[in-house]
Length: 341
Image (cartoon, rainbow, N blue to C red):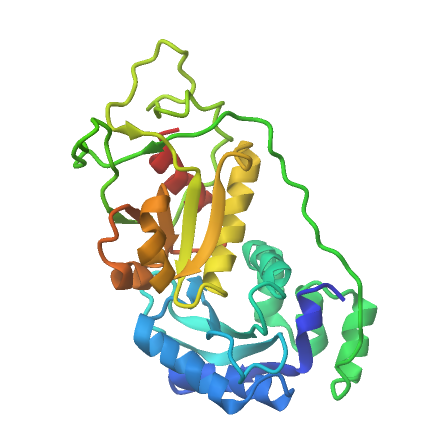
């Protein structure tokens, strides 16, 4: 099995389940983790409490929610569950409601699930794979849509009571790192000069459009790293944007716990930078809301959901809201604004 499908026990898949509201939907997904001895019931309570505290930031794509909470003693092993609801349910996310698919993530540590989330982002971004999840009639078909081959999916469904199969499948992704020069961050026109004459970016929360255009071609090599140009294709004599600031070479993706949706968003943003050839110049780090407030001024920009942006408030740097965490087109458009390319 793939690293993604291997984390989903066939017994942790429920199709056409009934739930009255978002709390009930999350509880269904949590109960599946409990039934497969991946978590205790207190983890389910924590997932619900996280949404109550931070809002519906777990809704990261149209019709899809990734429920999760901070790892603690209630997580027995890293695992995922899958629930497809019989009737769509609003979670309170205007851009992506109503929700039909709910997956719950239990992470035993900060790294074991990263490759699985990267694979999940690819599945949700692919229209054909998403349709398969929406129409699957058996757990085996769900596992196949998540990357298991036919033999593995059938074997897993038949052996639901024995989830101990082991694989060594690697999903390493080769990244391109040498196509561009160092980028520079573009700040809001409302910034004021610091004492040393440089400019510091001000916090801006600008919701991205609900329907982003198709990804534009990767930008031409950026101008000098100390200034962003409004015209990425212009030559060295092009006028310098007076509001440009030196890039800090860091982007932060933020969620409530720093281990679920922020990693999901980080992966999609990294794919955009890979396509641009900027991966060697910009580091993307996933973090939680508390850490983000302390580290904000280290970064060029914070990428997050609308709910988390409201929680963060004014952190002294630009905050960009991403509505669809699987959309390279939306993130591409945001980063072009940030770096003026």
